[in-house]
View 1: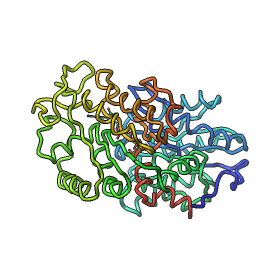
View 2 (view 1 turned 90 degrees about the vertical axis):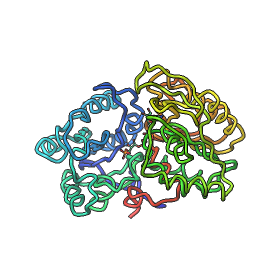
View 3 (view 1 turned 120 degrees about the vertical axis):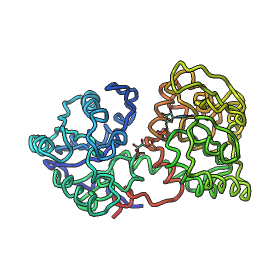
View 4 (view 1 turned 180 degrees about the vertical axis):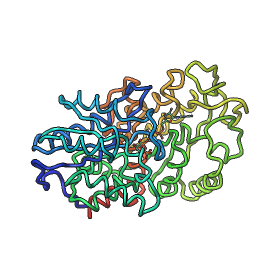
Length: 397
Ligand SMILES: Nc1ncnc2c1ncn2[C@@H]1O[C@H](COP(=O)(O)OP(=O)(O)O)[C@@H](O)[C@H]1O
Ligand SMILES: O=C(OP(=O)(O)O)[C@H](O)COP(=O)(O)O
């Protein structure tokens, strides 16, 4: 892979569009974990330090091309300013009058943040022309482009894929660092190589399993991901997260894992709750006997032990996706148990994903207990699959 880096760009006095991943968890307007903002700071500082006018762009959540104040990046601009130690001008739109005026007013060394890219339907459009037209407008705000949003490099979106094909570009330090670590996992990982999958982006991440089955020795499935597997085995999953349209695909994974001799480990018990709420009544039940009116919000105590045992002899581990709804204390125990098992395994351990990384911090686990905490979940998984990621390919051109 050869990507130009910041050292290859002459940025002084020029407007540089930085695509960052600032997709942080929010509780109303309060940022509950600022890890991704912190991770974006070094590249922005490197650019301001060299006298660039820095225009940061990013997405938040999935507002689907509609302006929705719930997904405004405004609170992120404030936090970014605090972390940079300088004001961050906030544009109230993405490529409209406010964005143009905000960018126009930037002096050398100053920083602006545009509103959520996904308020614009062109950003994530599947139609090349629509995406391209939006990319032209976005590119028009700057003279140079720096790709640094590692967590979004698997998305063929305008700001990730099309803009670097218009503007002279380079990779920021975060992307360079992330790729360097993940590369180690693709080049002869020490075995046993175990991948742990959980979380809630089930339909997105089920897709990576086919390729992972050709690479790993063991796959542990927890979180919201587990229930489609349990259902595919014919069990009742009640009101748990379920990807009904992917049951056949999942049955295929179960038989392929068996054929390849890959150990696919599913929960044996779960915490079944009456509702999705922090104080919901709940109890541990066998994973094969989830009551029809309950939803599984965490892995149960027996599964925590089972997963810990399956991690104990691992030499390489990649983990993406919390084991339960860790945001609610009552359902955070499974995630904590898995995190602790990674830490005590002594393996080369990589945790990836916005929420997984946030969980590690929220649960008070030492960040240096892991070999690497990646800002990308889906992006890391697709990298590990050996796929060409649009945002990396565009930077390599
Ligand atoms: N059993 C479950 N049911 C519903 N949501 C779950 C469950 N387990 C985990 N989650 C949710 O998954 C979310 C994180 O998923 P995801 O975005 O895929 O992870 P990451 O950001 O680490 O890549 C968390 O908000 C968590 O509450
Ligand atoms: O949160 C993200 O990915 P992750 O949950 O896989 O870590 C990225 O910001 C990408 O967001 P997306 O999955 O809505 O494209």
